[in-house]
Image (cartoon, rainbow, N blue to C red; front, side, top):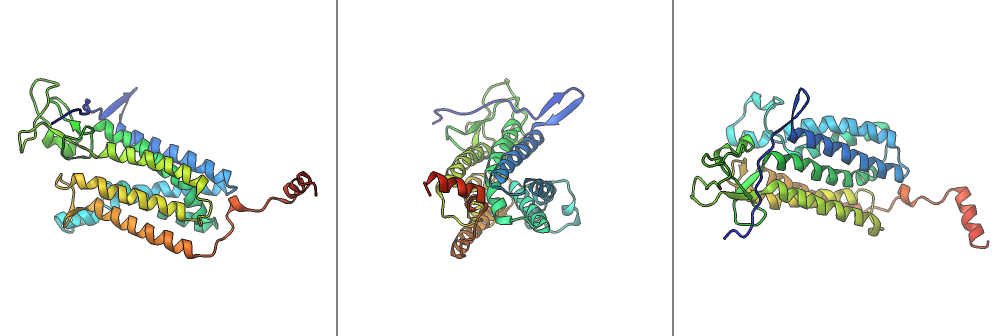
Length: 304
């Protein structure tokens, strides 16, 4: 029984003067900019090299674009077999692949510049979470990543006349504009899990938790906050993408390819948190002792 539902006309394009822009791309770019801004602020607050970090972000952007395409290739090989055309830059893209490619390329640039990689990755976590929240707005606008049929109150209802993202063309229907479509297979009301919305809400919660952990997780080792972000988001994608099984995504046994990627990330993050916790604690820039002038002030205040 449907007690509530979400429904709105998709907005695939927006016109700005002579330009016709995809909201999917617009919000992906805005998400990257917002994430880079908040991460750079944290790098600067911790006394790290913000100019070097900006250089790493440029490399990370290029790596993200490549990784977003490349991570989908194994799934396409599983579904369709090997073809050299899979290595073209046109086709499906993966947010998990974008994260992986961006982090690897950005981390490589940090190493080249002699920057502390793990503390800078820790500073990147809130930016990665915020960027996900903003980027997902584009997915909501074009109505992408719908899952299986549901009566959940956050499900998305498809109505006649709605032009959904191309992957969901089979869910569209004709008739009186604004009337609720029916599921072609069952004849039931066409309400589907809104996976992009679930991911946005999960990323917003993760953003808030990361802000809190930066304050209260005082005994963490450099890199553990980053590993926490990897673990949370990987597990989040594993759970959310379960509602998309059978919706056309590539599958590996009982899981979608994104579920496999997310689970591998979550397990790897748990191992990384454990391993970093066993390492001797090193001085983090946040924990650096006060400078000589500051120490004299402290001494005077203490009556020494």
